[in-house]
Image 1 (cartoon, helix red, strand yellow):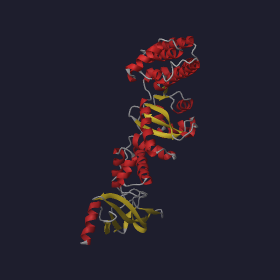
Image 2 (cartoon, rainbow, N blue to C red; image 1 turned 135 degrees about the horizontal axis):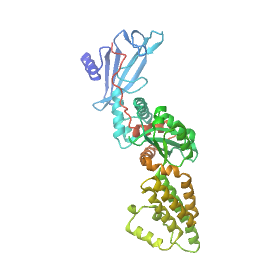
Image 3 (cartoon, rainbow, N blue to C red; image 1 turned 120 degrees about the vertical axis):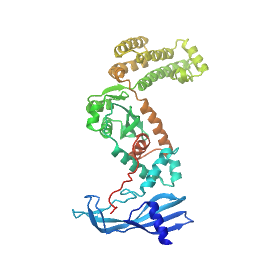
Image 4 (tube, rainbow, N blue to C red; image 1 turned 120 degrees about the horizontal axis):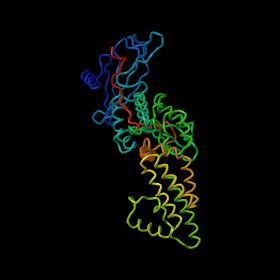
Length: 420
């Protein structure tokens, strides 16, 4: 009966003649099944030279987590054989059920990856799989490494670069910079810091030298470190300043104007601009009828804030220009109106945009933006919130690439080295 049971589990595990099941123990109280395997041959294929070599010895017994059997946690125990290669070095053979160094079987890793991808959060997946945080990260890290190794060195025409907060603080190392493939909607890689050094490391990690040369356009904010790195490593790429970041600068000019004017009005006990911040920063499509009416009433008061808002809205015609030549003319007109207004915060923004006009005009050639990257930022923020933050950058990079990298992370079930 025991021999039948052992053969039954050997068939379930899909083992060849080189491995046999020597013992199976069921612990009902612990809801656990332990299976012991033993190598039955005197030779094995060397993982280094691919030749059939005699066994040298065996490593101490190790344990691998396997797929549950009828809701019972299933563990495999075995001593891994070693062979002596032709170069006289001892090599550990490849196992048919697990990758080197892994504590999980290939089938369990494949199942865990699917659960992690489908679950509402990493914590929910961990609870379902009954894994610790460290075990879960081990599976995710191996999956990402596998996926990056399989990624094709294909041509990538347009990419986006942006920064994302990693730790608390405002210094460069408290941020991460990420690169996205705009056409294929995926994160290519993540690097530490928002300095030129970090941006350079990101480009070199995400793209090989030929891919760097083939990039046609890079969407980014008006970051000098990012631009310097792109100019150095991507000689054929246009630097395209992201229109959403441009709008953020314009909104900042309007809000700073409002803050200064509101302070002056309050000193005269005038509360017209009190609690009006989002009236000036929100688009019509996201406002209630009451809010629109309130803003229209304030516009009739000829306040500086209303003038700043009107200048911000006027800039919208820049993006509606037929081509870059008309856009340049529209910008010149807009810039003159801002200077005439005398609104210092808006003039400051206008001068910034004028100094970076080449990157704004480049948009009309490629029409790319960082909307995709901003969308990934939302996903990344949710991952951070679920994990209550990350202290280790590599862990942060792993979880981003796991969920946003569109990687082929499935384990390779064709194993070599223990079949003879």
